[in-house]
View 1 (cartoon, rainbow, N blue to C red):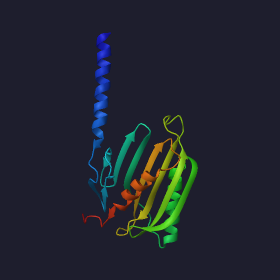
View 2 (view 1 turned 180 degrees about the vertical axis):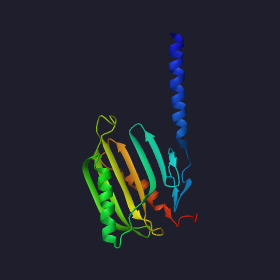
View 3 (view 1 turned 135 degrees about the vertical axis):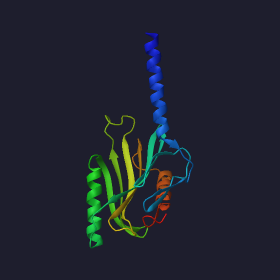
View 4 (view 1 turned 45 degrees about the horizontal axis):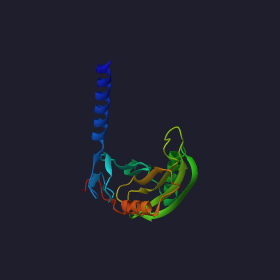
Length: 191
């Protein structure tokens, strides 16, 4: 019986070590290049790199009372003849993605950002107690932008939190705005 308990303990510690290795700690303002995009990690300590590829970069920061996520990814998208059709299509795309959450509040705005036509969005959603029992809300803000230098490419920049706070604090609004401002768009292959 003792051997079985020791074996179970060793296996669980090994699994924890493997899980911790997948997320590596990073320095604030670390640079990550995607195809046509340069991303800087958030400028606060405690963030980890969850994923870095040519199409997506994901950062996460965990605390006892919240989980923060900041990511940038690219999507291929139909090319439209006018901005109105493009923005309507981007809004439909984001509404479909967010429809799996229990909406409290959501807003969509058509803006120019990073030299491109963008859909800016923000929302507050209730978290299902069965999926994440520690948190009551999923808060999100972000942009879906047509890449200004590559037709048919859409860039999604998003910042979110899971916590018991209904909405972002002023500090998190500042962190998200700084994260978005530091994303640089360029031609694919020019980095």
